[in-house]
Image (cartoon, rainbow, N blue to C red; front, side):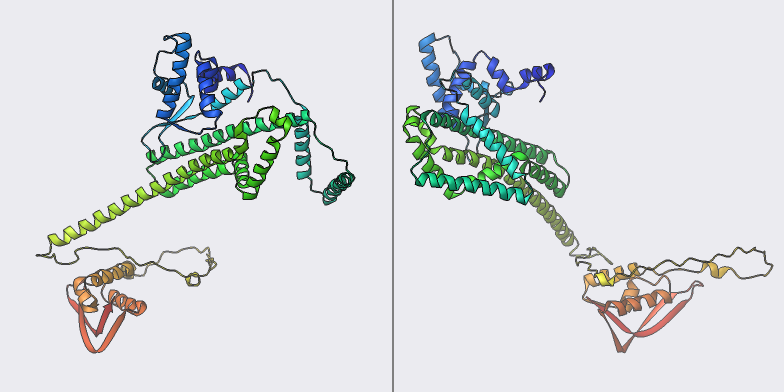
Length: 480
């Protein structure tokens, strides 16, 4: 980020950390929040306990500076610190609790850490940090080397160094770190451990911001479920696959190993027992700093779980609304049937769409056929003088087989079987013998029709001149 004048002016107006540093109450806010949240690594605190701790702090200050120093109540100050124009605390209701809780924002923790770094240090170590930088550069160089020969040469060199060190130890030459080197490295370890806890709060804040955006989209979404889920899961995958998400996942997998936890506990016990380190009077919480890391990581994991709960609740709500709509349709059908129970109407009363799935096998699809190019000859047309009947040009028609199949289905919805004569009686033939032949063709193709040779039916249809034509054929019965 460029530190130009416009950017810094925007940060001074909007960033909560800057607003805290320039506030008149910054000494009280920073010292109290550091003592309550940062130092003991408390991720959240109920309103009652936090207000009581602040009341004790205000009481001690009023005893020293008078009653007019901090005249307001502790709860008023807490609500003021979590307001949008401050942004130093986050006030929220955890699941299953009706009491508000408070937690630090990442900006406040950054401001408190910066203030802690302003104090003069009695000992400033540089060797350990230089060695850390050198080690990081070696890891990046070796981790990006693609030449197998170079990798083997480096491994051989390190093995030779280890063999030489083993031989020196066997001869009694043991190189030990001095008191200064031990204190320097321990100070660097303490600083990195605290920074890691602060980073967890920022990771949790990013996941919480994603959860807030998910809630807003669900509240305002009026489209389909698939599009919303695709958009939300795509954004969540983007965070999980970012550098921050991958680093957090690798750290979590490393720390969740039982062997790693036991190794960390053993190393901490041995290091804290060293005399040079004990002289520094380290914080007792450093003995369980890896458990603090686990607790901070669990808070970030719970925030991700809240995101999954929001998606599941959205799907449950949508399913409930769809089921309710289906039940309303069924109730309407039942009410309509009861209304006409005593006097059912003639003809088709209600149509229900097909419920079976239309299955089309791949080999049933026609193969591609190249279109045949028509040969067009350029001939000169000459007008003729012969008198021809052109009525046949206007007497062409096509039978709608889809309409005939629908007539069969509608008739079978009300009864288990129907004859062709009954079907023609309900739906008179409009196109004569061609339509009758189409019915017979459908009966042969569907396979759900039988013909009784011993019985015969008579089918009639009108002619264009007002007469009647009649056909006698074996009885054809359509069944479900």
